[in-house]
Amino acid sequence: MGIFKKNHLPIPTGPYIVSCLDLMTEFSSEGIFLRLHYPTATASANSEQSKKWVPWIPHDKYIQGFAFVVGLWTFFLRLVMWWYGGYMHIPAIHKGKLLPTTQRKNRKLPVIIFSHGFGAARFLCSTLLTELASQGYVVAALEHRDTSACATYYYQSPAHRDRDERTWIPHIRLEVGAKHYTLRNKQLNLRRDECIKALNLLEEINNGNVSNNISNTSIDLSEFEGQLDLDKVTIMGHSFGGATALLSLSSDCRFKQGVILDGWMFPLKEEKLEVPQPLLLINTPTFHISSNLTVMEGFVSRPPDAHRQLYIIKRSTHETQTDTPFVLGYWLDLFKPKIDPQLGSSINNSLIIKFLKSHTDSPDDITRELQVLSEQSERIIEGKLPSPVPPRKGFISLLA
Image (cartoon, rainbow, N blue to C red):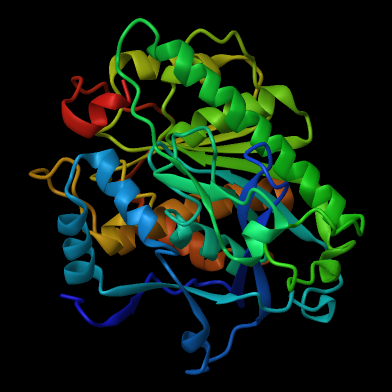
């Protein structure tokens, strides 16, 4: 029970303290909005750090959006969040200094672009993203403006920004029917475009052009100049973000490998794509209906010589790869036995870090992750896709 208590998501296990900041481009909905996670200093015990942690919910509009997506009253969802999770924080310092080159052997920092799922936001997978940043990655988590996010916003002008007058883009429900695929595919293409814009932005920042950020003029991005390794960029996504990552990989060869977390394949079902880049697919056993697996199998098998790694985490659910088990508890598959949230997250993150090590040569030491995977091997199924589950009702039926 966390009411009135300042709680936090799991502390990242990597050697570095994590910082984050929000970046926005253009005074219109045509720009992009993302949260940048990055390592800031060698980790050490310091009770003062927690005072600088970022609130998990940045604005009440996001709670309203979550409630709308899942069909609950806002006051009820807010009450459950306070009761279960308390005043939840992300263990990341706001706008900290970038990790000095002397603390990373003068190496550039590898980059990940992250795409969130249906009804989510830039902060919903913060447990995963802060873990990656603590291992030395720079992770750009988009907040998509295709109306699939629970909520997002932009500023219409510098004056609106200075007064913090936000133009909100609410989540829009789409009816399942004849036009459902066409509309979802349109959203998917917009999401892909935003991922490419995010990579373009990071390239500009790495080249010393820091003028494009309009969200906060006090942010100094010049310290990122020349510090990003953009030769081995990873794109990663959860659910709808998994499909977004696949389309991005097929569209832009600058993305060198992909991580697909319980990917929702419906928006891709009529696309004729091949993804030659290496892929890691981590699935849960309770999410995938038959049609979803059919599309996923196509990406696994084509092209035939492509590198693929497939895993299923036993007793995980579609929520396990997000923060919601720590904030709200498990809600999906309510009466089925579930993996402990911390353990499920640890297995998921260890699989990702092991994959990234083989393709980006980072982080230096994955001894802990290999130990987790060895000790928890009975909870992992390797080399296959999940068995299909029957179609659902309610919120999860929208992902059909």
